[in-house]
View 1 (cartoon, rainbow, N blue to C red):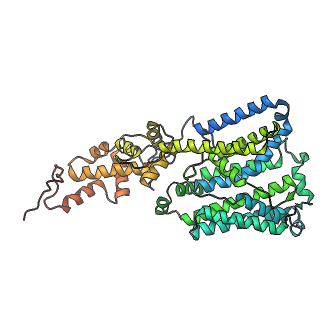
View 2 (view 1 turned 30 degrees about the horizontal axis):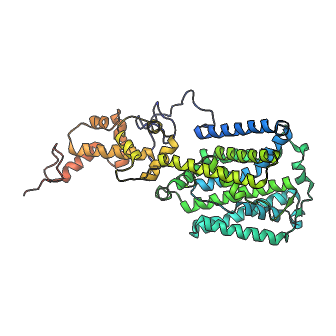
View 3 (view 1 turned 120 degrees about the vertical axis):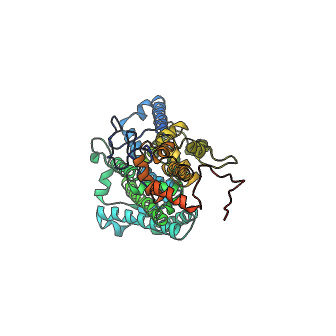
Length: 479
C-alpha cells in the first residue's frame, strides 16, 4: 500500500490527511494520547458505566459482604480464568471465526496436567502439560478450519465432543487431586502480591499482551483484515489460511493457560472443568463490542464484559438467587447486546442498495476535499474503525485507497480530456502540492502525469480535443 502523506493532520495509519509531501518526516502530535494510545470510545465508557452501576447495586443490596476485600479478590480471581479464555476467543471472533471447544479444551488440559504421571514432574510438568495440550487442541482446530475447509462451527463442535470424551476417559469420571505444594500455594493468601492474587496478575499480563498484539502488531492488523474481508485480505498478500491457523493456536494457548489457573484455583482436575466457558467467553466478547461477523473488536471491551458477568454472578450469589435465574439473566444480556450490534451495523456496514451505498457515495462526493479519514468518519457520525469496516465491506479496500482511487481516476480523466496544467489538475482533485501529486500519480499509475497525457494523446489518431465525447454520439475516424 502506498504510504500516506504525512502532514500537520497526520493521525496514524489510515487516518492521515491525503495531502502533503510523501517524503516529509512524520510530525509528532502534540497533546495526544498516552504512549499506549488507549482510546476510550463510547462503547468502553458505556461498559465502565454498567460495571460502576453493578458495583453500586452490590454495595446497596449487600454492602458488608460485597464490598469486603475478600469478596472483591474473589470476583477478580473468578474473572481471571474465563478472562484468559475470552482474550483468545476475541481474536478468533474478530477474524470471523468461532470456537465452541474452549471449555472442553480447558477440561482436557486440566485433567491431562493433573494425572499422577504428570504430577511427578512437579510445578513445571503441570504447567507445561496444560499449555501443550491446549496448543495441540488448537492446532487440530486450526488445521481443520484453515486447511481442511471445515466451517468453524462444525470443526470446533467436533472438538468439543472429542475433548470432553477424552477428558472423561482419562479421569474415568473421578476427580484428580493435585498434591504438588508449589502449585497449590499460588492460590493461598500468603502468595498474594500487594494484596493481588497471582491469578489476577497472570490475567492482567495476558490482557496486556493480547492488547499489544491486536493493536500494535502486523498480526493484529491482519486479524482485523481477515475478519473484515477475507478475499480482500488475500488479494492484499495476507496468507489467510495461515493467519487462521495461528488464531486457533492462540485460542488453544489461552485455554492451556486458563487450565493451569483453574488447577491452581480448584486444586484438582475434573472432566467437568470449563463447563459452558464457551458461552461465557462469547457473551463477554459480544458485550465488549466484538462483532460476531468479524472485523471489529477490542480486548479492553472483552475484559470489561468478563468483569460485568462475574460481578452479576457474584451479586446473584450474595442475594441467594438460584443459578437458573443467573443463566436467564445472561441469556437476556446476550440478546440485548446482539440487538444493539445489529443496530450499529445498519449504520456501519456498506450494504449496496438499489440507489447505491450511502457511505461510499458520501466518500466519493467529498473525495476531493483535503480531509483526514477521521474527519470523513466524523461527517457520517462514525468512528474511524467503523468507517474502515464499512468501506472494506463495500469496496474491499481501506478508506484511504478508496479515496485515492477516486482522485487519481478523476486526475486521469482531466489529463486525457483537457489541457489543464498539472498543477491545476492536482488542485482539482484535492492536492495543493503539484510535486507530491506527481510523485503519487507516478507510483500509483506507473508513469508521470505529463507522460500519461502524451500517451493518451498518441493513442487516438489526431490527438484529444477539449470536448468530452458524447457516449450516445461517438466521434468517427475518417480516412
